[in-house]
Length: 484
Ligand code: HEM
Ligand SMILES: [Cu+2]
Image (cartoon, rainbow, N blue to C red):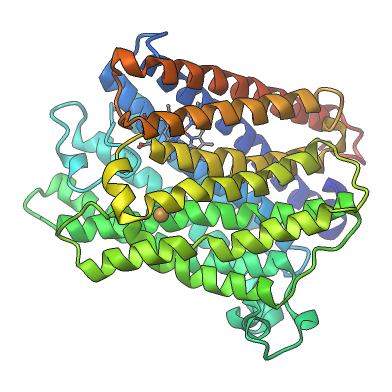
């Protein structure tokens, strides 16, 4: 299916809205990747950026990437779920507007206001800047996140409304009966519906807790006597952050289910294991977040044990059915590989591979050593850069067949080879105990940083090629094809 499908189903505005999303995603991704490259080059001591600016860039890169990964996932989810349930284009557009307002507030908080407390805005750090930023700058950041959260809340609620009108309940849309063998597999919801249901359940809960802690932080900024339990705040922040970033994968993975079959000419088979995986992951994603607090001795032990044990299980169900499903879908299908199919396949693989070091880090014994090392950016860049974002870039290439041209394989290989070098540099540095979030690195760490910088530069060029090809094909295509 190509972009025309959107046109025939919902008129010009839905198609234009999807294209607007993809354009914003492509451009913001590029900008944030350049920020990442600047950080890496600074750590490599190939360029000179002062630490205060480094931490502003790190905050912008973290918040910007998490937000744009969410938008990438939302694009994929909306494009495919609306084939099955009624959704409102106006709400979809509203989410984009909220996102852009939020992004401007966040960029302003950093580059004008100097806000650099990291995307996790850990309470009460935003109020303790050591004069590096004002309360207003921190507030702009909090409002920016709130805007983005409100947009996503509206989008998920609208999709929930559409899903309920067709399936009658969230359980039915998730395939709960199929999961437990109580209804025939053939009557289960399509993968896009099950995934969208999971994403909306977890993200609505995450956003509500995130909004609560943002408001608390905002009040604390102006009324310092309004104190809040820092450990409770940390729990809320990491519940929100963990759920939101995980939901980006669960939305983007729809691209694997929908796009791979187009090129293998085989439907994606859903079965009991598929539905069970989605049901289990819905629960696991919500309860596993304490793996972000394994170093917090004040946490109740049971919560940390839960975090560790569920970490071993959490990503696995959906991951396994997706990786296995992708392999069986491709195996002996006679698929003619192209960039779109390759990227979604790499996305499934990148996710699967990245989860392995993540599970290691979710183990308390390992976490005591690895927690604040570059092992952590090593594992999450693997499943976000080579997972979520690869899936999105596959989607971007797929919906504009003209962009799937002679240049696309170059972009693909730069992305995959550069990305692998980049994440391996983080992981090996982490294994050698190089700390994360350090603006200034010791001479003995520089080799990792330099190899990582080269990998990162290749990624940026690869994405540049894919995004520019997309923009050119959208603007130059015949009206009945992809243009406006
Ligand atoms: C060309 C691609 C990218 C480059 C060069 C890059 C580079 C970096 C660097 C150098 C750091 C700081 C590492 C440290 O702690 O020492 C970082 C952190 C981070 N990156 Fe990326 N990155 C890229 C892509 C992405 C993507 C695609 C995502 C998510 C979708 C992402 C999300 C993050 C997050 C959440 C952090 C943590 C910030 C913090 O510690 O507060 N990055 N990245
Ligand atoms: Cu987590």
